[in-house]
Length: 262
Ligand code: URA
Image (tube, rainbow, N blue to C red; front, side, top):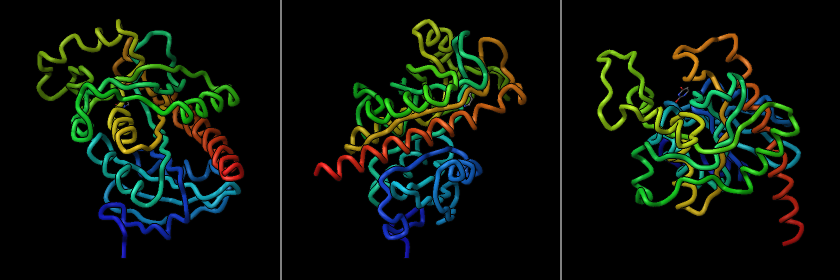
């Protein structure tokens, strides 16, 4: 009998895992699990929520897909927290809006513009969507060690892929006034990129006393082209995954040190 409603998991199945890696795409779950050392097993797959567990030398690590957007991300974080997870790393993909960011690079998000709705159910809009410092530092150290070009800064995190990210190549071709000119405004305000989950992840985690970070591979650069160049974008996912895997190793060491000291 599952302990939680959507993920179809029990606390026993998670074997004490305190860290979860969160891709949006269920197809990315095994690819992330394979980048972590240890024995892997698929635990559950219900709707967009697919979970693998990796039993590694430093402890068990969960990999759970969130699906796209805030509402399903909030469900995944909420239910994993109920099962004992306290540290979350989103491993996503993104569209850059600054000219200096190349396709295939990664963005490590320090804070998110809250263009979502789900986070407002956890904390009012005045509450910041910020990543956890320790998790972000682990991601930065890992990125330095891998040599993958990375950028740290603010991400615009939108509930919609089309109007919220000011895309006009749509069925109606119309973007409501609130978002007309918004991509240019975010660009001028030094926002690095668009994705769809970090605002919810950061607010839910902070509000619940959990830790969260976000690394995303750059699939396209909106200052150059609206369409993704598949060949150029190919390194984006493996780059984000290898940085996340290095961060997990660092965070597992941190848990081990804490347990020794306590
Ligand atoms: N994900 C997004 O939300 N936007 C992009 O442009 C690419 C990936």
